[in-house]
Image (cartoon, rainbow, N blue to C red; front, side, top):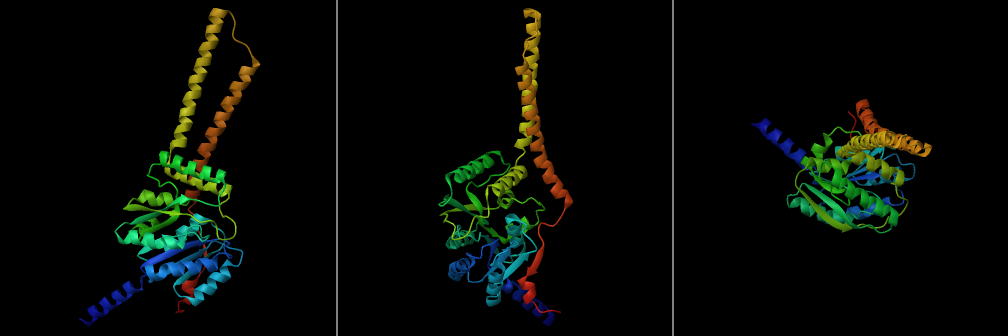
Length: 331
């Protein structure tokens, strides 16, 4: 009887140690933003979910971010700092944070304060109503160039049309995941991560919360055009086979065009007495076919390179420091 009571007490103590909410923040060279970010997160969570933890993932920062994070973690045991051995990328940092989060719900938010921490209470309120995935959808994006906005909006709408799952336009990684969703996401083995797409692939009860995105508080964007293109390729190749189908369609189109040219040449020979001549047409045809072949090889290469990354099986990230382990007593 005593052993049963002891086991029940231990189970209750373990359950009590699990926070209601974990907030995951991927960070890369955000030293100018971190003091304001930590202050606003604490204020937003104080009344909404006072039983919380912050999982701060330092993605190989080379500025003062590590020192600020370690100092904050020493002052507040609810803060857990994971520091990568080098920069592994935003999606790897998001994945690491979710894998190490212990809360019954997990919120992912960027460190640049473009996604306001004050929106988190709305996400939590929707979760408490029974929704398991709560996506924050941007209605406005001030402070970004017209070209960048055009490219981003075009990509989201194209991906929604061609993807094999129902993507949420204008939604980034700022969202809340129920514990069941986070656990299911952690079991997905992909190395080329497009986390927002993986979450939609999982399904579960989903709702959207709309908000106005703010301008960056300080510093520079960590997603220049090159990284945006790479992220877009990960999204397309992970959730759509349409580019591969386009290669096949281009092949049939070129084959049909070549047949028409053969018929045209034969008719000219039979009824006109000569084969239509012209170096220009030959050059154009060769250049056109060469271009089609290079495009096809490029599309195939994008998929093959991702297969190669998956086959290697390297870890998605390497953690050099974990403040939770540093605080734990040594055996």
